[in-house]
Image (cartoon, one colour):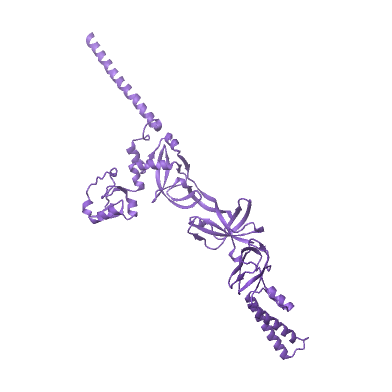
Length: 469
């Protein structure tokens, strides 16, 4: 009885030892895997909660997972998207020009030559009716002589008030002739002051004065002593700089915010002076060389601090209603689409296509694709984009991939369609990398359609890529 009892005891001990060994073998391994699941950065290559297949099926196409350590290495920063009004101050470069309505050009109305000039050169300030130079022209001889003859004849006819009806008629005719002679002298280029002086003194005037039509600065001076000139020659150009124009270069996307009547601040950077200007009602003029629109502003110019061709800074305030706006660097422009990467937490970044609206400075409006409160990548998105493109799931964002049936190159279906590099054969659409490949296919479709191509031009496309019916 003792032997069977001892055998049974030994067998029980063996069984217990076997069970204990199983528990010891499985326990630490499970605990290690659980620890790794709780800490994705502890050495595993995919996020906790499942394998890559489960992640790709649960997350949108192109989602990538990057460890915190690698995020720090590539400089990834994120920020929260908020919907708020935008108060922006656009700072533009402006150039001062003279007001075209205040520019006066003095042209020669007859042939002649300059007899005397005065010390008024380009840039000099002259007053209204100031004499700039004098000239002589034979065409004035007959007009001046006729004026003096009419004045002398009028003096002989006038009496103390007892004129006869015939004398009154003759006096009225003299007044009419005098007006015609004055108009003739004015049309020849004689100023009103000199004509009035000749009427008052009844003296012969040989040289005609060139006077300034307004107070301003001399922009052009083409006279000198003894200069012979022809009719139509520009002798002086004078600008009244009491009010000037400022032409500011504005990008086409921003011109809509600077409507007529908008008040702007003009700054002289080196003199620390500011002026108030108003956007003119004139439509902006497009400059083909700079590819910008020139907005015209009008400003008063006290003490003539603003001179033509000076560069100034223009600050235009812009206030927009609440909208979702993000930094321009957060958006990736892939040509056909605009992508931002949304931070989904735990190192997951989702590429998302968005639609944009206005752009002011470094802020871009998001009209579709983002909601207030979401977090997006602000910097380092180019590295994340590279990771996303390496995954086959990213094809759902950047376009389906197909193989060119002629040369075997992998092509983007969206871009090929946009470029017109497609052909339909027997109900299937084929995509090409170039017009030459398309021409070869169209010439003999049966040679390439349906045949596998192995030209060594890259890896095979994903299972879902290829000809589409």
